[in-house]
Image (cartoon, rainbow, N blue to C red; front, top):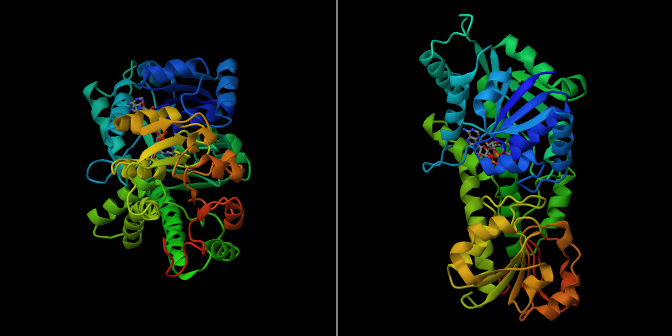
Length: 459
Ligand SMILES: NC(=O)c1ccc[n+]([C@@H]2O[C@H](COP(=O)([O-])OP(=O)(O)OC[C@H]3O[C@@H](n4cnc5c(N)ncnc54)[C@H](O)[C@@H]3O)[C@@H](O)[C@H]2O)c1
């Protein structure tokens, strides 16, 4: 059993902390957000993450998992410290490392014995060395000695996290790989112990340097963002040429060299990771005169994809959404999360609301977050009770996030509820034929059809 402190109890910190406790470790999760910690102490999750509640509750009960705002106590008791604070985009397109620096400095200020500092936050290549520097500076301020006069030592490890929101518990406990980047043999031994249940199983356990581990995370996320962007651009071309992107993606995905995952077109990728990580990687490339052309192009294409989606709606509504009411189903950046960071749905609502459109919106988990974010639009955005309430008298229905409960909507009821029968299925979860049979005008993504193929009226 290892005693572990986790600094930052957000999506990654709460999931990692709870799962590490499930592995038999003693885990103390710290956050500066007292409200968040008060909820977690009661076993209540401040986020929507399927399955995580049960793991948190089970481990609080067993005494292996504790939540606190007392950083000093957590650090004094632990031999391993995970950093899982946010690294949001900074104004210059890079990553804002202020929370990382604060966490590192608190480690330098409080540790009292040899500590392995494990960075799980996604950070630009080189940030692990900065963490080392910040800790060293703080240690130096207090003489770097423990109570017995021995020098306090530490090692920094990069251990990037690949979990996905919506399946965080499964992903953490069944990862495709665990990456551990450090020069220190001593730290490697400690890490094997922390990940013992995974290390002993078939999980691919990759040991490498600090810099390579940091690069692995960025390269992986950027590759996936590029793959999504690629199929989005193919979908755009399908709309113009009469091909069906669904057939194209299906056949492409059967090629093992390509793979079927991340070949689903839509209104652009969002979320708390892909946009910021592609941006930070591109910036690192520019700084080192190793321009990441493909990633730079994907960033531009993805921004345009979101605008394209909004413009498609405008075009169908005769060029102007002003005064029209649009029903939106799905606000989170993907299903099974309450996270709306960089969500295409939020972009589309803000883009069209700024042009005078009104909205009736619904999401199964992200209403609270969306209410805060869309507050500037006042009465122009109505927060509906369910999907059918959202579509009442609207001029168009937009499905932007493909929650399962939106996959089996009564399309005849949709037709009855809408004032105009426009149906935008941005995630291609319905077939054109079934929508048209219900009397709806159907607009998918990258699909041919009466309204949108070569030279057609709308796309
Ligand atoms: N969300 C994901 O799906 C995901 C997946 C893999 C990696 N990551 C990376 O993990 C990191 C964390 O992401 P997240 O989504 O969990 O962020 P988050 O915003 O949900 O959580 C970060 C938490 O850190 C806390 N915090 C900030 N400074 C602190 C400090 N000095 N001491 C204690 N707590 C502090 C914040 O209050 C917040 O609760 C990011 O670098 C992200 O890129 C995220």
